[in-house]
Image (tube, rainbow, N blue to C red):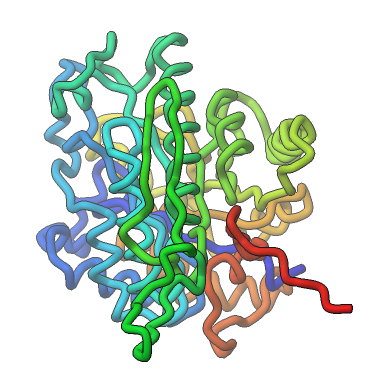
Length: 403
């Protein structure tokens, strides 16, 4: 259905191109300000984008060839979860999806922080689950060591990271379910604020994580905010099918195209009949101009400034498109025909390309019949907006059937 075709914008600093900060209109001097993030996200919200994801990492920036920070790109950033919480009151409909790593973060803190965001946004929070694979990140915490300083862990390390991620996701889900929807009773007559029988401990003991007790945050508006996982490799795809509500894929990466990726996800889903089909959303990195020639010139200028091309397999795990709005609409239409349920667009330049997505692409998709006009619809929670079924608590009581 056109109204279920999701449009998500992925925000990262001055943009996804490493040289985007050098443009005169990049606003790079404002990247550490609330105003920058509020202005960009409010525009996405006002013009009908379904959700924004905000990137985050335990590294201050990408590494150069010498193994140290690459000082030619944006170094340093703000906490994605805190940014989305700060922006939430200024927005009305858009989903707010911070990236939060599970590798060095306690699942209790993940669960309660995302729950808090869901309350503050009245049911518009999501969580992009990410692992942190490098020795450089591990050294910040000092509790464990990894054998590599790069972003590509060896097989044994990767297997352990994804196994740990499964456990953390399970614990977070249990904590989100630990309060019943009606646990807060506010019974003035008896003086009871809560019914303790409606709060349940999240009992879990695994190889990596052990948790006893309940969340300190009451059940949030969505119950369980939707979990996003980027399935850009086989082990990540397996994790996504196990724990995610939304699967992000990268057509073209490793030679796999959209139909193959959808087939792969559906095949993995068949191994567990209890898991329902979830939206598969394609990632594309975009630079948008009025003509293809101008877009290609702009990308070439950025590549020259960076001293290297930014392309699929060269700095990017997603296809990089120097394109126009009509061409992008056609590309999105072909993805939908391949079974893709939406796109997550990575603007190479923020706010220039994020503005083009909101002001030009959204109405063009409506005109092309690829998407319904959602700007005037009643506010819905993020699960509903993405076409994901409501979250039913594992502790939900079965209604009594009266004769």
